[in-house]
Image 1: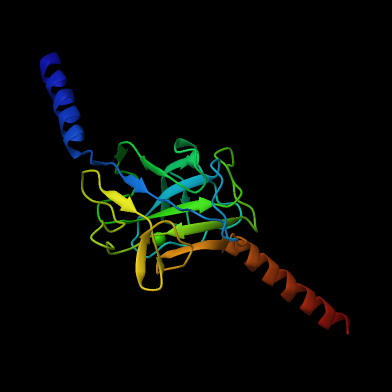
Image 2: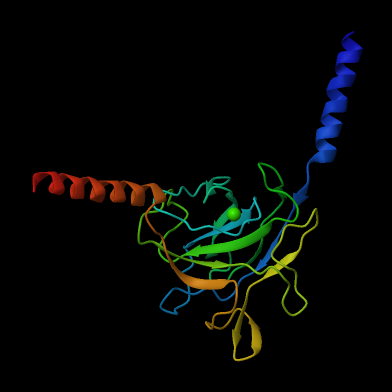
Length: 211
Ligand SMILES: [Ca+2]
């Protein structure tokens, strides 16, 4: 009986080991900039996020938390976080994420995006209205590079491209192309809008009753 129990446990470990999918991204993300066009300081927070429902990346809102594996916009999950201190050059980031395990709704085929923050650092745990961030993703590979999606395994290089006129650059430029922006402002949480709306309706009804 004891031997059977041990065999079942071992089989379980082998099955779970065989099922665990891992991936490692090599990030080539120079040159990240702020909304005013200057190179991003080296202590600013970076996130790699996965679109687990395949419905695109939603907005970060007031109160969004920034820990590993946290979700924002419902299904978009933080799969890795770091800052630019590795290269110690403002704006430049070229580094491996290390081994990441696909779990918690994150699967092969899910789009991946890089988010960087204008003022926040690794110590920041929660967003507030007015914080600025940039986002880059690209569904198809540019210049023969990999698409910003999750492969079933391996270690693809994710390149960050910008363009001047019709020429693509690996980083280096501040001209926007599809899938990239460096000037998104954190907005109030949708429920805050709902509360605000309810408050205005309430005030309107109250004033109507008074007159
Ligand atoms: Ca999504």
